[in-house]
Length: 60
Image (cartoon, rainbow, N blue to C red; front, side, top):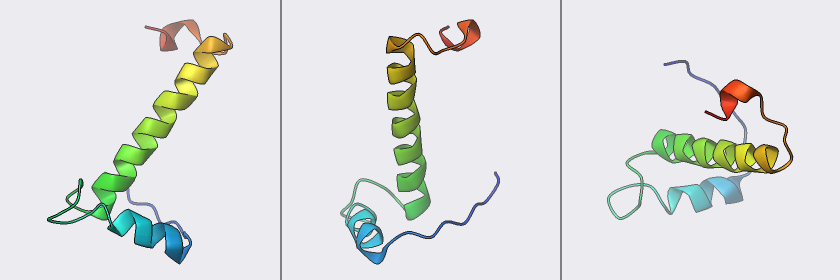
């Protein structure tokens, strides 16, 4: 799996960390970030579909 590096504001990282760990929804930061990216891409696909901007093979 490729690794990437991003810079984010400390406040956003603190909010993310509130959802990570034994009492959180995610095991680690990577899981939380992957879930967020998936959700964002799903939302963008829904918007594109509503505006007929998806290619035929992406609709299936």
